[in-house]
Image (cartoon, rainbow, N blue to C red; front, side):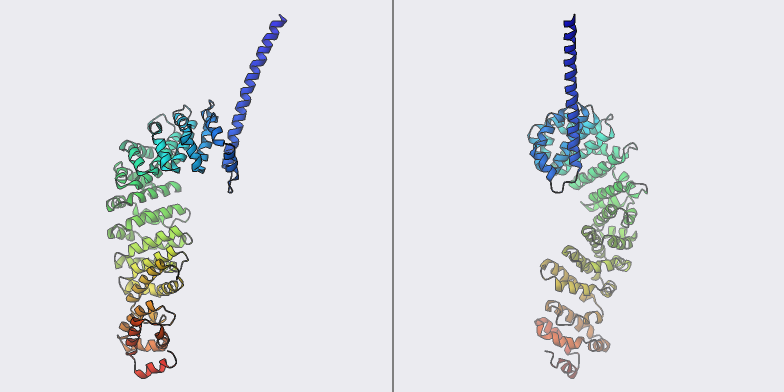
Length: 520
């Protein structure tokens, strides 16, 4: 009898030890994946943590057996770590697609646990973003049917649908070819239906709007398909809505901008929804830079298409709002460039719109941007001034009075290293000089410091203006410009000298001789 009891005790002890061993393994697995997750959340500016993880072959440890762990919590956290690592380095994404890991990730898409499915989605999304080749491997792995099932199934929770949308979005962005394969009418109608569903959480709607924008950006055909699935109505309601979360409004503006990119008809369809007024007002959003910048991008696409669309945008108060936008965007290169492009594009069409830009104060912001140290901003500002100034003196003189010619000249003189910038500045200077209807603003630049390639245009315009009447000629003398002309003569090119002689011929010889004494 004692021997039987001993045997039972031994069996019971062994079973307990086995159970304790598995419990210890589970605790250790939990501790390990939580530690890895914690490492990946830290700031790692010197890549010290990342290098240590790679040195210890973290991908192999996570991939097998943890990514296939029977405990859903461990499996989902392991997959989540895989996704973060894949996003951090293309080489780690390559491990996923080339070392047999991809098959287990695809299998996890159909796991009964929603967190596991969502984590698997995140791995595919991270890998697809790193290269079109990796995305192609995912496309041919059988992942696409599983992702589409997640999206279409009524039993799929919103978190999994969001993960599926993000994974599909990454595949769509990887290449136009992939986008054409994925984006059929059924997918687009499902995305729009989910966007319209009152039960769809904010994050899911934002993911869908982002995906629709990326789909629209791929090609005119896909942009038209998005419109055909009646996406414009919910998108424009997001822009107009006063209670729309800021990040969702910014995403909707970006999506509409991508729709307008391709051609005039699509831009008109967007404008006809009545969204222009709200978009113009969004330019002045002080709290959310992405809203005003995406609004500016949408308006730029519209005004670049036709003068009619530019007139619609102008009529809703765009010039005044544009001025505020440019003030808010000072110091931000991309935003400033967009504002300058809007101002120049709108001004190019006709004098009415150009006057509205100038009189709103937006013109003064354009002039101030000419002297910006960034060559792209300076060149675009010079171009925008030229677009506004060429219509007539009604648009030219206010800009000249705001310092346009002074800014153009001084920036041209100091920008000796950039021929591309100097070319834009020179073109704008010539247009400004041609449109100037008074000698006063031009007299300042009658000087030996003015480059000869600019002096000849300046003097040619002065010849015309000085012939109008004696008052202009008298002012040339009293301002000191006639005396400075004598100093500048030796440095003029043949054309400039010819114009200078024509100016001198308008004055009595003794007056010219007086100012010429010791000057040449």
